[in-house]
Length: 157
Image 1 (spheres, rainbow, N blue to C red):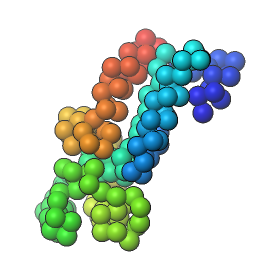
Image 2 (cartoon, rainbow, N blue to C red):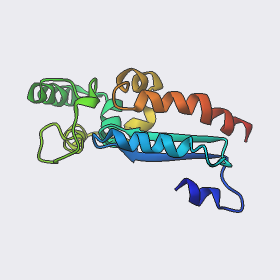
Image 3 (cartoon, rainbow, N blue to C red):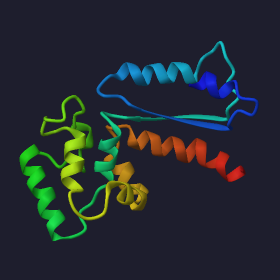
Image 4 (tube, one colour):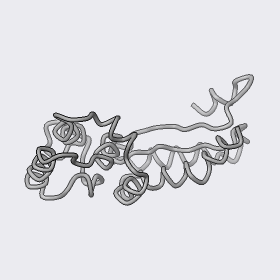
């Protein structure tokens, strides 16, 4: 993907690559190797990986917060079923089998069965919540890299 962007007449100043890791750390290693390829000088100022563990739905679960009593009850029921709070521990979710009670897609669907959808909640989530809940699922690293590397490029225009 980086090669395709690099071959453009006017390559972008920044590239963000999103990939679910699905419990396969070699995917993150492959991204890091490509971004730091010593044989090549990339024409981009920034290359950021949005590398979700196990998958991006875990990030959306981390952003989710109950907004009324019905949603608080739904979260409490899920916590009882899972034996952990999926919003506080999204890294414990899985991505292998949607029938698994810990499957991130299934948990997200249960949380968002009513009320605002996951995308709206993600857009409104305080960055501090994402950072505090996302340490082990790649979200905290992503937020840090966006702040440190991508925001300055965007600010410069």
